[in-house]
Image 1 (cartoon, rainbow, N blue to C red):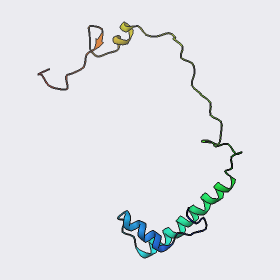
Image 2: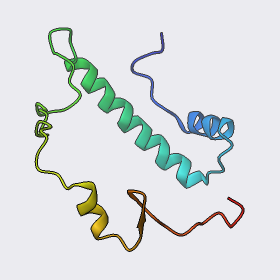
Image 3: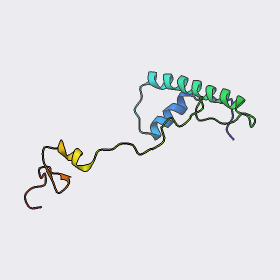
Length: 103
């Protein structure tokens, strides 16, 4: 198991950048090493409080279904729907062909 107190070094970041084939400037490498250490420290703090008696959560607030129940209501008839169409045929909307005349 890795040492929990180990810090991410500049050499570690250089090695990872090489594996990922990412070209980084020396200043970027130092900056990333510091940021990665902050991330690791934050994860350690969370691990300290994440004990078996603390339930895991995916969202801080309880979620409920806010959708209404599906209920059949007053609907338009086929003739009412087609009455506003520019062109209709055989109970359906008629639209211009888009694939060419060979269809």
